[in-house]
Amino acid sequence: MKTSSRSSSTASSNISLLIQHFQEYDTDLIVEHNGRFVYPNQYAGVVLKQGDRIEFINPNFGG
Image (cartoon, rainbow, N blue to C red; front, side):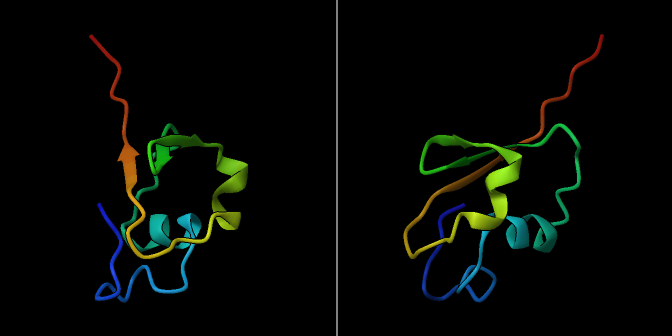
């Protein structure tokens, strides 16, 4: 997803709030911010700006 000024869910937001908004509660969730991995303990500190790219990756392992 790409943040924009028209998206109220990302205005003055951080990754933690975005995870809550989209209900991404997978304990193995991987998050990228502008193409870079973000550690879970950093989610609340990453403030989103217009044009940022956020990717939620839900790895599904199994056989």
